[in-house]
Length: 145
Image 1 (tube, rainbow, N blue to C red):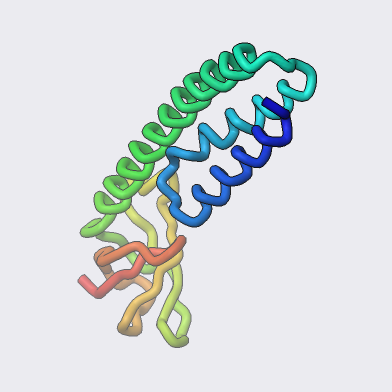
Image 2: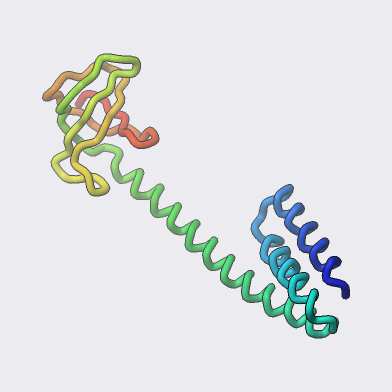
């Protein structure tokens, strides 16, 4: 099989993966592209099919394993994020603005830091006790306790 046919097949599979992302065809697309590069030097169809088969199995196994681990880490991050909600702290500085913001100190460090930037729906003053209601990007949203 000519090398350019493998490259066309690999490119077509990549386009399918882009249009319908499901992380399955990408591994076969990469295997086809790799086979296309190898087919430039190796002319036998049996050798090309062997390269495609072996590289498909290896790429699929590695890629799917990596994807599964990434999904598990995302689930752990969501769980860690949820564990912060309800934590109580003390306002150490406040800024007037829309929304009101400032810094809050927690008795127990949260994710390695005991002082976090906060936003709130109500104006808080230095020394006020507050409770985390949600995480907004890199800040905590708090309400007066």
